[in-house]
Length: 213
Image (cartoon, rainbow, N blue to C red):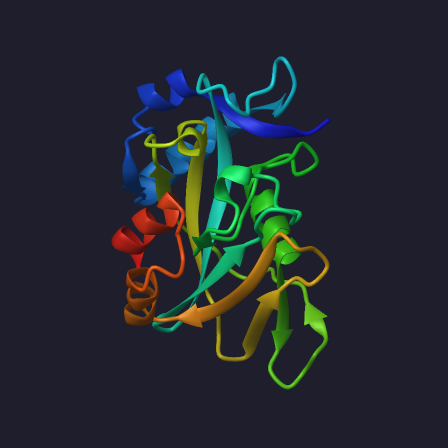
C-alpha cells in the first residue's frame, strides 16, 4: 500500500493556507507553515476504502520545484496513456514543477523534496556524463492551490525553486517513463508554445508561471 503526507483541510484553511491561486511566503509565513506540517501532518493510505486520493477532507502535500538557469526554466511533458505516470488526469500535460507525494519513508517534507529531485532528474556537471547527487539550496516560494478540478481539490503544492549554476546540466531520468521530454525555455518561448495549441499545461504550472516566472 502507498501512504502519503496529508493535513486536514480544516486546519490549513483556519491558518490561511488554502487560498486559491498562489500564496507567497515571507520568512515568518514559511516557518509557520513548516511548523504546521510537522505538528499536524500524518501519513494516510492514498487508495482503498479509506484512501485520501479523492477525499478533499485531507490535503495531500506535494513538493513542486522549479529548476531555473538565469532567465530560463525547465519544463517537461508527462507520460501519456500506457506510461508509468499514474495520475491519469494529468497524463500528457506539460509542467514546470518537479515533485510528487511525500512518502512515509521520507518522514518530512524537505527530505521528500530532495528525493523527488534526484529521482526525476539526472544532475551532471558539464563535461562529465557521471551523475551527481543534488543537495544544493532550494528556496521555498509559497503555496499553489487550485480547486477548479478534481486533482487540485485534494492537493496542496509547496512551490520551491533551484537556481542552477552554469556548471550543472540536467536531463530527465531514463530509468522510468513518467516523463517523455524536457527542456529549458524562457518566458516568451513558453508562452508561444502554449499559444501554439500543441501542448496542454497543468493548472499549477499556469499559476506558477503567472506569479513566479
